Image: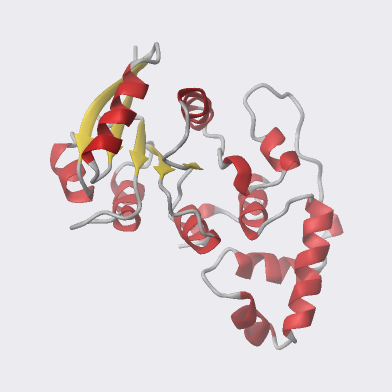
Length: 220
């Protein structure tokens, strides 16, 4: 049985291109092609929903954030892969808070798309260059290695900082909430980057989710 995919993007050329790329992959089938979130909802059969939704962020009428929230609430078994040129960390973190499993840019090639689809089908994250090589490796679908137990190496204050990194707060706002200086926050961040071998705040969030330090339900 083919894996069912929905493509939701307001740009017809992009949408058509994604549909063609997915349809060319053996075992994958596009069952919904929508111009925005509302269009997607109108076409969705709750009794036979898509397995994966390729979702843009910026769309009229109902954008990617609203659509991801609706999918989370109404289609809990459906995985979301963001396909967007909006790659800023706050946007990716906001989407992770809504339960997405992956993020790729619109200039991706068929091989990268196929890789992302396969990983997400297995409930694994795919965020390509936005995370460090080590985390990316552990999310791959061809490794038998397990994430090492780093939890005992994270101090209580670093853990509080890590949880707040999963919010939409800026680093300066996190410093204010934790009653420390921005420089101290930089120290927490740099120590976690080194301990977890990630390079970005997105990497920290994904590590926290992947290891169970923080559950997706805790983020919303």
